[in-house]
Image (cartoon, rainbow, N blue to C red; front, side, top):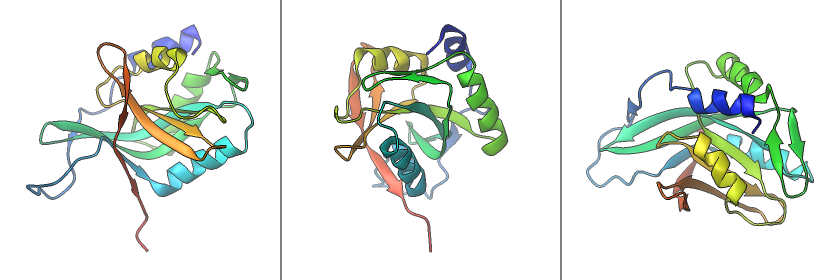
Amino acid sequence: MASEDKKEAKGEEAKEPVKDAPVEEKKDMYVHDVYVQKHILDEIETRCKNNKYEIIGMLVGNAYKHRGKEYVMITGFLFSEQIETSPIFTQVIDGAVGEMSAKRDKEYPGSIITGWWHSHPNLGVFLSSVDIKTMEMFNKGFHVALVVDPIRGERAFFKIDDEKHYHYVSYAVLREKK
C-alpha cells in the first residue's frame, strides 16, 4: 500500500465496538472466524477470474463476539481501479484507500473494514512476506485476509499472530434464503 493509504488503513477505528453475536445462544455452537455471503465470494472470484494479474480490495461487514470469540460477518467488498498490478504483485496507490472508504460509507453505511482480499493467479493460496506486511496494517484481532487463486479454483481466509506467522481460519459461506 502507498504510504498515505497506510495511515488511513491503520488508523481506521470501528464505528462501533465489537458487537454481541446476533444469534440465539446454543451451548454446543461452533463459531467460525468468518461468515461471508455467497454472492460476495462469487463476485470477488468472478472479478479475480476476469483479471490475468493480481488484484486487491477490502472486505466490509461487522465484527461480533460470541462467548469471548471474535468473528466477522462479511457483507460486501470494495475494489479500486487505482492499483499497480503484475502477475505476482499488486498494491493500491495513493488515494485508493480513501476512495474505498468513501464507497464503504455510501454503499455499506454502519459497516467497518473487516479485512482485505487479493488474488494469486496460479500461485496457490498463502500469504507472502509482502502480504504479511500488508496484514500488519489491519491490526484488529478480527481482521482477515482472503486470498483467491482463480486458476486453481482455491480460496482461503487468513489471520496473522503476534509473531507475524499466518494461519488459515475457518469460514462459513452463507446462502441467501429463497
